[in-house]
Length: 455
Length: 107
Image (cartoon, rainbow over all chains, first blue to last red; front, side, top):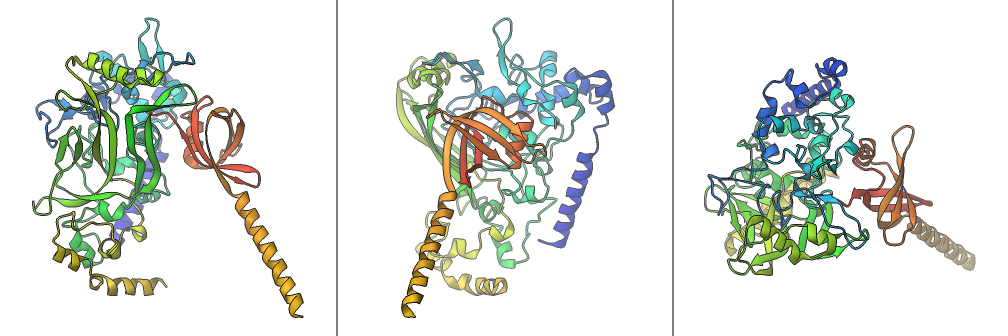
């Protein structure tokens, strides 16, 4: 790493430490007047609540122009999409109390459990009531008491999500920390680190080791978050980010050979060699848990236990009932090789039109009846003509976090040895090219020298 | 003399094997899913003990937690008594040291 980058990182860390150590200027006001929700925030930050209602974090949707078979003029996202990691969405799996199981137990569950509203003002809601329902503190407070955020029924029997609006939580606010982000982002897909399968712990992510937090890279402007280009991250705030920018140049290595690779190999390919989480689920067959509830059968690994697959990706997405993943090729002039976590999910498809059917989880959670879940979702969505048949869908998830330290990144031999991680033939290279690409002449001297230096 | 050396070697080998076995046995790994019946933070907040009631056997197991992330989840009540936990732990000298301590629930 160059001295300049080290200096920037140290500077960022010191600045972050200073900023974190400094109290929010409105602390005295909050302590004196208490906290009444977003209207207290708006005393000093007018317009921010309305602004937030226009973001992906509130709408769980946006116009999607990079995915096949999606109308680019409509808004889509977690709000309404169906795929086999979740097989449901905010509409069919709206937060609700599931029917009692065989033990007479019930519970609240839903895809929009993470939505930062109070459920009365839900995904995509607008207006003054929605503005006042925003849970600002869940993202901004370092003293949020999570036992105060839970689904309950109000006096009219409506399911509402309570919030911690205590003065203590409000008096301790600032820029969102890693913890604030991971409260929701680590729990998606059916448990901790199941969906994307990466950890943001200090010992797992080199940026975190150096004191860099989520929003140092995802630099938020007006509550709009820049995102990477995961083929499964459909909704976006209209801003994208890459590694190249303030911190890393397009030629970031001291080694010219490595720099030559950046034209065709994404940074993640070498610097994120492992991923984890769920790699297969079966929504047609749920497993009974010891508490009497059922969960979709899931094969999973710990973070860092799964080797990615590698594919050309031009940042557009193939989206068919049986495949969601990267489009691109060696020859299109736009693609680079990226790493992906491959996932395969089994669910019901409609024999009549071949489309993937959605599932309301309330019935199968209670009694394992998956077809009752499909029937309930069909009712909610107004689908009358369907015949459920089981089938599989393959999904490629972007592998964009859990960056490894430099000395653990892939080196020449990890790809160019005969047993390397890249399948050059599948990536579109001819037999002759593969022979050249896997010839030790390419790397032997360089790695020998490196080995001698390290001995 | 040769015989004495052989006996000494044999005894040494037996002691070494026994020690190796004991070390292995004392670092046994176990997994469980259980409901938290009690969480107790240490005074310095650098460790905690949690009692998990095994959902299969009903047996209560005391787990020692030292990783920062889980301790933080205890402190801000992201993990509370009554939550169901998937836990992997290492038994060392009669103590169960947590290696993985995660809530089973997710959205």
